[in-house]
Image (tube, rainbow, N blue to C red; front, side, top):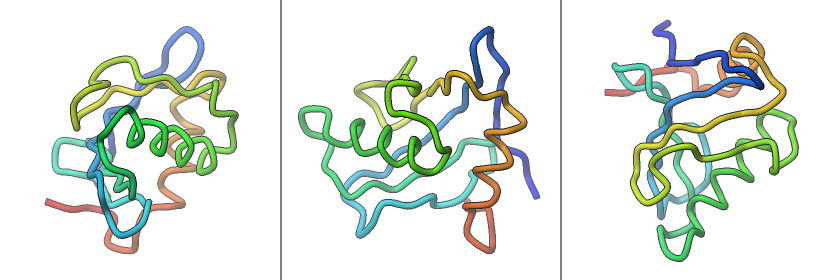
Length: 107
């Protein structure tokens, strides 16, 4: 399985995400060839609704509070760098891999 990009920081982990707004349901769509995690969200990219949905989904998936997740870069784009505070990269990787679809990877 191709690894997605995770980095340990001083207070937690950071990962690259590509968001697909206006999806049928909110879910992990797989891992792209460059290691970016694709996440589909139902909400449109209007007034921060897609970002809010992304943070809520990640918080639930990773078992952390929403205020422990922060979009570091890409707040107004589809490609984002997201920090997860208080979890190291290994723990985030385990939790995301457990939620990946069977095939695990996309394009």
